[in-house]
Length: 228
Image (cartoon, rainbow, N blue to C red; front, top):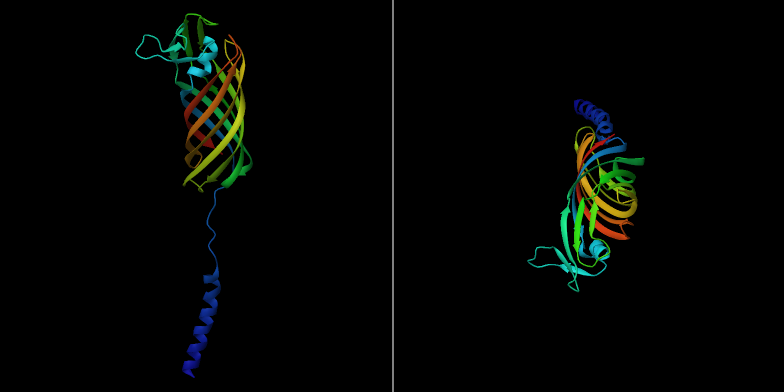
């Protein structure tokens, strides 16, 4: 009788514990975010500079000069080009919207940004359509669409994300207005609403003054972000 009583007690105890042990643990997830505001620090590199814009501005193909007082020379040797300045550091700001929210996994992103373009001063000596070129105050207003893939953590936990986007922009300067197309990609880390991003952007810039010309810029950007 005693052994039967013990068996019944153990069976009742197991039946009481079993439902609790069968429960699954639901981990906390980060809430959805809809807006990111950024402050941008750009360091810009030129790309194919002897072709874009120097060849168009000189009216001839050019090549880098070797151990000369000037930087480039036309292929026929008649025009000498001195790049007096190519400013590499600029500032910018932007806002990114996530129409369907962003938490974990892929999300649609829409970004608008405002950034400075490099300050470019060039002097030409010899036959060329222009004798000097001065782009000193150019700014670009950009709009982009892309996809971000995020793994955000709840609260102040450390999260990460990557993104890829492309878009178009409008350039304003004392030389006149212009346009551009670009693609950019990067990623970052965040803790709570605060984060930092590292971004690379390839931009194809077109201006019509003093004559039709284009140039390529590759800014590497560090962004401080605030997401909510």
